[in-house]
Image (tube, rainbow, N blue to C red):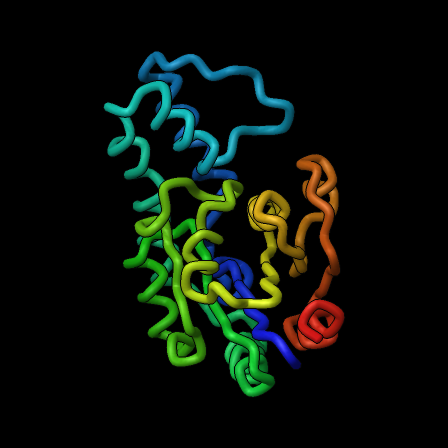
Amino acid sequence: MTTLAVCVFDLDHTLVSSPLDLVAVGREMEALIRARGVPLPAHPVRWSGPELLALIRREAPALEAEVLAIPVAHERRAMAEARLEPHARETLAALRALGLATAVWTNNDRVAAEFVLDRFGLAPHLDLVVTRDEVEHLKPDPDGLRLVRARWPDAGRIVMVGDSWVDGAAAQAGGIPFIAYRADAEELAQRGVAATASIASLLDLAAALAPEAG
């Protein structure tokens, strides 16, 4: 490899598994927002938590703390039941041994992220962790890439690995390839997300990265 490559991972359902149900989080946030009298425009698919938070920050910022308390509560419950995704630790170690830099970019807050990364011994295999607390806008906005690029301004290639359409949409908006890990292909299509590659196991990641990181 002649140029530095950076592999950026989502956290929930990519490096760790947990009962965090992002659809349920979004629905609970939507119900609260409607109950507070904030009108929500029609949505072609469904409102996601990050989209709702962005709307509240624009239209009703006084409600932000109350709305944000919903994902925080879900994250706190889920992190206690989190499990390591198969081959996650070995994959991170192998990528770094190959000379790639590794990062996590998650919509979770830093408390939840650091808890699971420390619990499963992933932190020593990561060069950077970007959480909700460090960004202005959540995925599917590409704002987190600003911090990744600031950390590696000379990186030749940056690749995103994640399970959700928000990961793919953020990667696309930021102009980097997206590798879908056990993602819902139908939802990716509904959201207009095109994956560079799709994998069912983290053991397949090195091969999927080869054209990008080579």
